[in-house]
Every structure is written in C-alpha cells, then in structure tokens.
Length: 359
Ligand SMILES: *Cc1c(COP(=O)(O)O)cnc(C)c1O
View 1 (cartoon, rainbow, N blue to C red):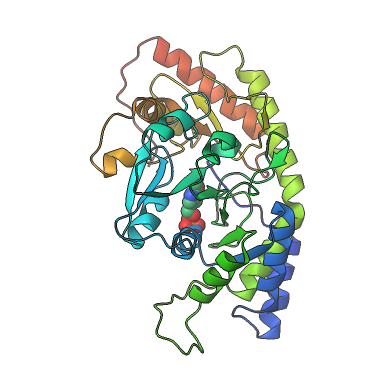
View 2: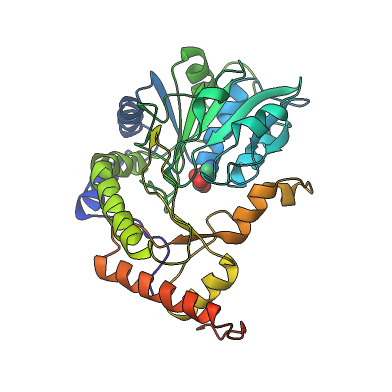
C-alpha cells in the first residue's frame, strides 16, 4: 500500500528529541524559545509564540486581535474545519467566501462582496502549497490572519508567505510540511499581539483572573521542530522533484494539473489533480493499493448549512490529492501514475462502479 502521507523522521530527529528527554526538562523551556526564534527568522517576523496545535494558534490569534461575540470572521469555504472551530471558540461567527477555481484559494473578489460592518478579521489559508492572492486582501484595513499550515517557503510577488498577515499561524501536525507530532505557532511583527498571545498561552503565576489556556508546546517537541526546520529546504526540494515527475507523467492524461500563476512561486505540500469524480477515483485507486484523498474534508458551508459556493463544491467533487512526501520513492510515484492511468481508463470504459476494496 502506498500511503497518502508520511512524516519524514530521521536519526537526527530522534537524537534531538532523545537529548532533551535525557535532560529531564520536558515542558516548555529553552528549546521552545529556540524553535520560536528559528521560525520567526524563517518567516521574517519579529515575534513567535509556539503552541500545542495550529488550532490553538488560530484561537490565540483571534483572542489577541480582540475578536469575540458579534464579530464575523471571513474565510474560504474550502479549507480545514479547524479554521471555523477557532472562530467559534471565541464566540464569533464564521463567514464564508468562495474560492478561485484555478488556485483553490480564497477568491478575493468574492470575499470583498461578503464583507460586512461586523467583519473583524479575514483568515487566509494558502492551500496545498500555493500562496493566496494577498494584495487585494490586505488592502481593506481588516486584520488578516495568514494560515501557513500548508505552505512554507513559497513566495507571492517576491515575498515569502507568512510575512503578509497581521498575524500568521503554522501547524506542525504529523502530516504537515514539518512536524512536532502535534504543534503550532503564531507569528507577528506586532509586539502587542505577540505579548497577548504569549500571556494567554499559559495560566501559571498570574495575578489577575483573565481566562487563560494551556496551549504550550513541550521542549522535546520543539527540539524535533528545530531539527525538522533545518531540513525543510531538502524536504521542499524532494517534494518539488516528485511533483515534476508527476507533472511530466500526467500531462497527457485527462486530469487537471496544479496551477502556477506567474506572480507567485509554489511549493508542493499536496499534489492535487482534478478528475471527474474524485471519491470514485479515490476508491478505485485504493483497491489498487494507492491511497489518495480529498485534500479538504467537507466544505465548510455544508457544516454551516449554507449554499452558494459553486467553486468550492466543484473542488470538493473533483480535487484528488496524490501521495507526495519526501520519503516517497521515484518508483512509488511511478506506481501511483500507473494506477491512476489504469483507473482513468477503467472509468472511461464505463465499468460498474461497485468495488471491492481491500480490507
Ligand atoms: C492542519 C490545518 C490547520 C489546523 O492545524 P492543527 O495543528 O491540526 O490544529 C489549520 N488550517 C489549515 C489550513 C490546516 O491545513
């Protein structure tokens, strides 16, 4: 079976974690500070606050910005449900916009039309490794939370993503570009926002009764993060080489390939192709030993009982994410291509869609 995602854990990662475990200093400490400094330098931001997940980083970002009940927070309907959850944690209302069908990212024009007097922030995820169209989004004077959970190292009009938002957040979940198992980070150039987020992350030794959280990262996770970050350029290069291999092999097939707008560079977190019926293609690929996924679970408007998100619906029906990670071998990627070729041919032949998938 070729898995859809796998983390890249090397001997040096294990050694880095082991070294911290041996010191007995497990909780947030010096290694967390080092990881924060390293990420802040990587994204070119003044301050960073490590957390125990990307979701908690989003939660702290909204709290630090003072978003609360009565406020609306705009986001695309086609993204991770964690984004709506964080908005609901603070009692604000998630407001959705459609995506640009070519980039799978927030459509700035549609988002503009959905702004209201209550819109207090916009969450902008860079989906699958491609930067969103940042310039129009940062022109409204509304705080932007840049969600870099899926994109690090890509550039938009010559500037690296993660440096555009009022606040930027990252996720270091097991399947992300770099991992700490679970983990996240909030970054900003605003000392005030960083100070607020840092204060709310931890409950201990405080004089006042402000409601605080326990969102801290452990020191051994941070050591893993520092070790992984050191290899991020290698990870991205290997992902790009695999993507080039996919692109060369898939060009002649009846699938849509990832977009490459001329004003930005992308990285390959996911290799997402579009097919006629992604769930069916995915089930057939699984029967052939290749695990592919819909790269976003359910569109958010379905959770919220809304409609009118045409491009999100098309993406949910057609987007198929192929296995792509540094440990995927060239041979495995060739197997993925052959399985996809065979599956598409079978679907064209109109064979019955009832499948026996391996148990
Ligand atoms: C993974 C992800 C998150 C949530 O991160 P967690 O660390 O799993 O909480 C948020 N936004 C996007 C776009 C993601 O891909």
